[in-house]
Length: 250
Image 1 (cartoon, rainbow, N blue to C red):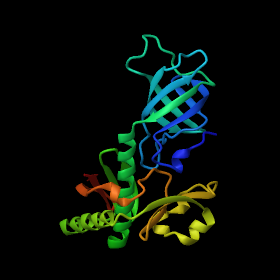
Image 2 (cartoon, helix red, strand yellow):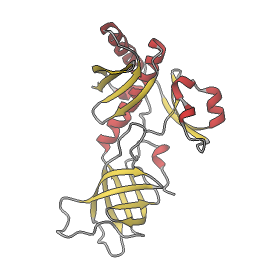
Image 3 (cartoon, one colour):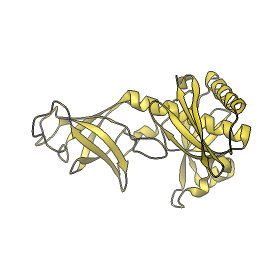
Image 4 (cartoon, one colour):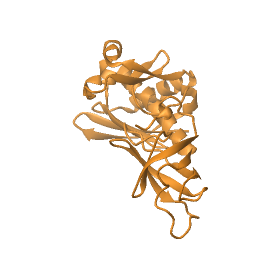
């Protein structure tokens, strides 16, 4: 199984790994710092370079264009722009490679994902509006919540409250918690643990100091101050008592 050190250290930008499987345009590595798409967060991108690779020349490079988790984690590769005319489709099994993250993309996801957690908690506290879904990007995000319609005054209150929490520079931490313990300690309206498969017995918790705790497998900044300035950029009704809010961080 692929080791996932990004779950412990979201700030690690490079890592060496070994190719365990190579198939069509994908590889499986023994470990990775690339986040696979899921939970409203896009996959990481970056580059993969051969350090020591059997029948592939050292220094051969591919762009990591997608990362998906199925039975294991698959890295989708495209040859680098300056690759030979007929490059190998993937590095060889057993090759030692280095991953370099597209750091600006990852950091954008981390900032917006943490801000989404702040927003979700504010919506519960101020409007009793639970989160129905969310999607973060490197340059913005959206959230669907249980609310008929927000007024302009509501939107102003939301912006103010989220920015206050950012300015507080609250520490953010993540850790593992036994599912039964999490069910006892965490707000069910916020975490909705019952939606997770029964096979998941250990939950990764993301906690914003003295404000929010919820189960989440995404990557986050270590302090809310890293989010920058929160700005709502739009709202729309999704019908059925659901509002969609869009926001960006400056």
